Amino acid sequence: MPSVYNWQLGRAMPYPYEQASPKEQFAFVININRCIGCQTCTMACKSTWTFAKGQEHMWWTNVETKPYGGYPHHWDVRILDLLEQANPGAQRWNGKPGDDPHRPYGQFSGKTVFEAPQMVARGSQPNLVLGYLPTDEEWNAPNRFEDHPPHGPSKPMDFGAGTELNGDKKHETWFYYLARLCNHCSYPACLAACPRNAIYKRPEDGIVLIDQQECRGYRKCVEACPYKKSMYRGTTRTSEKCIACYPRVEGNDPECGGAPMETRCMAACIGQVRMQGLVKVGPDSTWIEDRHNPLYYLVHVARVALPLYPQFGTEPNGFYIPPRWVPTKFLEQMFGPGVQAAVERYRNPDRELLAVLQLFRRSNQIIARYEIQEGRKVYQTSVNGRQFEMYDDTIIAYNRLGKEMFRTKVEEPVHVRPAAHANSI
Ligand code: SF4
Ligand code: SF4
Image: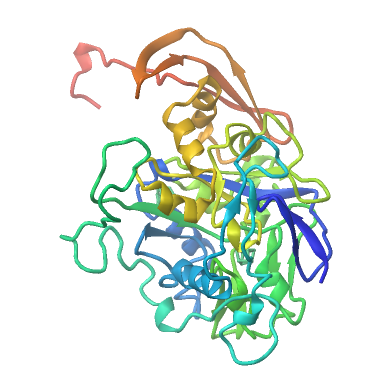
């Protein structure tokens, strides 16, 4: 089997196809700390793409409450369990997270879904990817355990006495919202498993699509995708998945004047937690330095945004700013070894990070580049024993066409209504 380079694992790994990186890659960052679980993103996607017959259970984007929620039910626990069975006690990371964009999280020495296919749950048929096919029941009730644990709301989600909580006071009860969509992986497991070559990754933007003419509904992609983001439709007998709102990303929406636009789920986000973009990638899939692309900055410079379950091996292009209040061990399983440092940086943001965080959801268009104009110091304090200073910097966003999209400030302006108009609209 050919060997490809996976920068998230910090090493090469087997993959059924030769390395072939797109020119640019669709990617996104979601700030879990600010998600309010309103499901506006979920409904924006549903009402755009999956409102027809046979698509009732299709939630291309969904928001689940961790640790107990998941759609399909317990998708991540099930695949983690299969990997553990395939490689007992050895799913480990070595080395330390660092600056090298070829190996920012150290090296994963365990097995990926491409390295443990012998554990496939379906019969004796040879398979290329470790996976399982969820039951019909597991595709029911997409938002089970929202805001409450399975054993009743009175029981705390307690992960053991003395659980270390990133330096914050221990909370006995915690949960967080995990907004998910297809990660348009660099090494898609869905594509690797398709016996009809019906799944392809676009060379221009890395978006992964299923050719509906070619698909015969064998559901190999549904079985293989470790994130369970390929879904079967009984009425057409084909599989379907998130299409990354590609007409918008191509700049075809009449609203955007030819500039790439963000997907529906990103643009609709009420909590202003989602940012989508296009990043430049090299021939070995590592990101080419693009210092002032906000996604490059958040993932490779500030290193506050981390991939979702990088150990699966598909090199997902969805990145998350992990929540501050959750035990590190739990987060490390989900986002890899960079968690502790990411949470620390987010809790004590430096001047540039604070400015870049203001870019989330000020526009529907994809931000290609930002610039910061320095402003005066407006505030200082100490956070957990560390000095924190806030400057009223102005941050300017440009689109792909080099046009200024907007400028915004770190300090939110305060408008005081004149006394004559108090209580009037
Ligand atoms: S998340 Fe799943 S469906 Fe999406 S590209 Fe990756 S493997 Fe394929
Ligand atoms: S719209 Fe935004 S805030 Fe609301 S659930 Fe989705 S990601 Fe979270």
